[in-house]
Structure formats: structure tokens, C-alpha cells
Figure 1 (tube, helix red, strand yellow):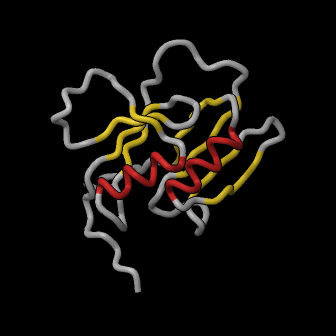
Figure 2: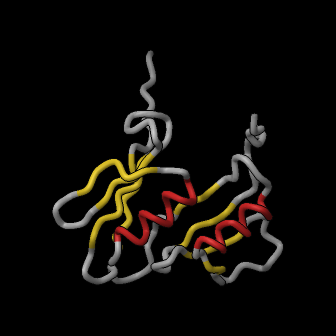
Length: 132
């Protein structure tokens, strides 16, 4: 019996200012804008474009944030530096710490992007890429 697998193709985040969040997330993830809709919705993703192993992010324009807490957030793993250095970089880019009731003993940091969307900075899961 053959098993089929799926991968996440894109994450969708409703936001008031897709341009602001595109700048933030492109800088955080080294992504580029891949597409823009007439309503201001943007799709960002890896420089190689669509269809690779990384999901794209659609920043979907909304006049008002949707009520209630979002059930989706992004977890980041540093790829070319340690967690502390990546935390410093994210804070300089405009991320802010968020308190969601964590104890302080967690091995991750909870942050929010410039519009208040939660995301977590985890420890690196792969060996950092060595600059050549």
C-alpha cells in the first residue's frame, strides 16, 4: 500500500497592513514578495519561489482583525545563529515579547510581530549554516 504525504504549502495571516508585515517577515525569514493581489494581499516566500520545501505566507488584507485569538502561529528555528542572537535580531526588527502565561522555564520565546500576531522562537533544530 502506498502512502501519500502532504506538506504545508502556505500559511494565511489576516492583517491590517500586509506591506508592514511583508517587510517584517521577509527580513526575518529571508523571503521575498512573490505575488500581490489588487486588494493589497501579499504572498511572500523563499527566493526560489513556490513549490519548494518551505511554505509561503499569504498576508491577507482585513479591515479589522478577526475576533478571538488566532489558532495559528508560526514557530521559528534559527538556521545560522544561536537562539539568543536570533532573539536579539528579531527584537531589532520590531518583534516584541509576549506573555501568554509561560513560566520562564520554556526553551522557547513567545513574541509578537508588529501587528500583535504571536509566534515562537525555538532552539535551532539543525546545525547552523557555516558562512563561506
